Image (cartoon, rainbow, N blue to C red; front, side):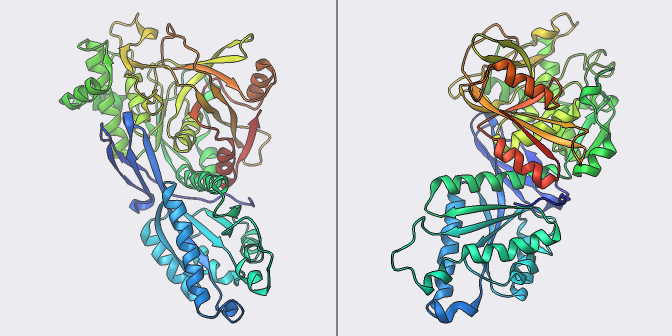
Length: 515
């Protein structure tokens, strides 16, 4: 794997939410359709990454590997790779053998037309790097993953010169990676056999991370207002962020939220969605009605501007403290996150980036604080001020829609979701400017598990989290804070630190693993 310069991508993700299990329409970079997905139980967005699979081939070796039939055998190997990737949820938009620079140029046009978000170079044999590079040089905005592939893990006892040709991944791979390294182009390298399920699972994670990096780099993130006064820890210089990562922070005046809210018409469809998916303890209240209107406001905002994520400070006259909306938008923030467009609170634009990474790697992301430490149980408490992601609601559990306990003293109290996170592996993800990084920025990840411990009186979505390893919780949390996170971060299901690191390498920024 090599990282010398970050790629610069222009990526737009547009999502149309369908409340029940069904399909989701997306469009990718420049409307290319590079992102595809489906809405599963409770609205969880599972993105299917659009992959182009290229297999460099050289006719030079046919004389020593069985003649023209060798090409057919390489095609069958490529078909096996495509079948494995398709079975893991990838959307293969193009695949083919590339046997010359001309074929590489033609492949590049087809890959672009297919809307691929990542190119996987399957290297099973020696082939001049010019074959693949004729395509990759044209597709210089796409992340590249190289798989040095064999069919099986073991070599046969009668290994001969034919096998040297047919099992030439370790010869062909450095041909391509050498040239990529000379160019300073980031790539990820995976090595292993098709028959090895652990290896193919690893490959799926790398492809997911590469596609996530493409989404993040150049993403448009809404900045509604400025952070809460004094919250320098959640702010960032817009130009510095864009220079380092390509992310564009798009300013949205709080007055636009207010004005859009006033124009919202009927929310009967949202009322039906909520009634079908929640135990509605706040049903029929004024705060409930206003929360639904704010949710529609945010949905319209994301759709019209093509935002991939957002950060809002609602504690201003135009939103929470005015006559209308006059409530916090916590339910709307969570609904957008559940639709695959994560939002943070308090104007925290850096955690909006962490949420974007976590959501697309893990399939769900909870905006949260680490609220307190239980030194005896070796756990920390995760909670927030009302945000949620239905993709992480336990199977068979109906979340509650309640009046937000944090804002009961407001003249009108908005609604928020409540459920407890299910037990299982999880990762905390942070993002921050940092002086120690050449890029000026770093991603931070800490793996662990949600223990399933119940806090039924906790006011909002959350649970107990235990860091991986056997060190005292205070030691690991200390390193978490020292890595540079602010008081907010993103939590996602699954052990994702390796994938977060891949995202960081493709973006050309730093990475710290806390363990």
